[in-house]
Image (cartoon, rainbow, N blue to C red; front, side):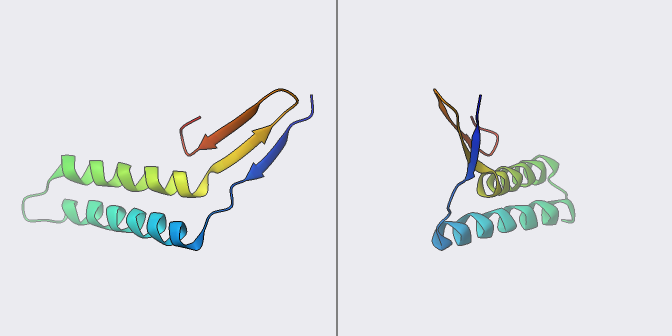
Length: 77
């Protein structure tokens, strides 16, 4: 069975949006741990949100075989 993988073409506006939001979430997540009264739940949730946005931005691919087209968008199939 012949399978082909194609990475998604991402517009520069979407790149700026997703990369910017991911960096903001990751940065705020780290800052939450350094506050005088650390908010661990908020920090962890911001870090996970940033990681999800980063994986969506970097790992969107299409897999085409003889009968199916499968799309992977980050951790979502």
